[in-house]
Length: 121
Image (cartoon, rainbow, N blue to C red; front, top):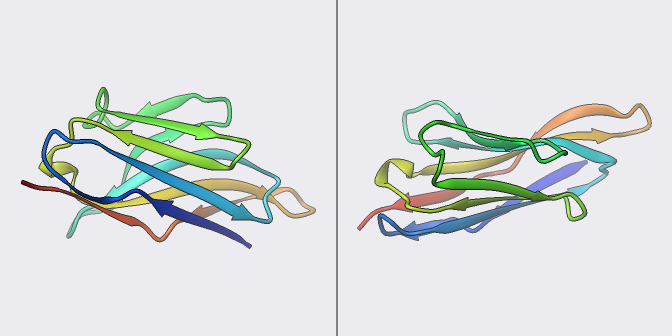
């Protein structure tokens, strides 16, 4: 099996910064796409940022210029650097990974349990 574990969430004042990390472990051959999603109370889960194994990135328009996604392929880890945080960034942030595993080398999608980010004064 495969596990994703997020860390780095917490409480921060508006204008502050946080860095989220997500490490994948288990029976992994390789990971293609890695991404961060977020879900605020009463809202749907939305894409924040994604990165391919080659390093190509895309961002939600609401975070472009403030957030940066990166990854370490040797450690199967993805990061989200969040700067200039706003109260509307408050949500549970989830890590996602498309993992190639097994003798069949099929791709499976996995989610982390989520980490709370609260932006408030």
